[in-house]
Image (cartoon, rainbow, N blue to C red):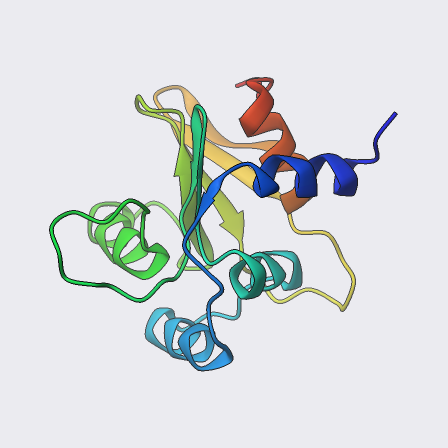
Length: 151
């Protein structure tokens, strides 16, 4: 039986990826959003940039070619868009990284945490007000790809 990390790596190895994102891209995004990405998401950005798999998408960072619509969601653009609509309701430390394709949005909690502390993923949508759907980024990716997130 695979560990969560092995399953996470296996899932992302089969996805279309945009990355890797450079340290400069990550630093610029953090500065623009006035947050620090949690270590697991930062590792994802550095290795994959962003990901699009069968039935799931993880927003991230990538170089834009300017040719039409991008294949991936850009986490800064997505965050800025969501902040305009949710600024009175959600803290700025929540960064939207995915959704269920309908009305539920999944946010990574970018609150400063001690080193090697897992970051939670929260769901917001109609009737869902910050429900924790995964206790780590890797668990979230596995659940999202397998369609096992319960909200």
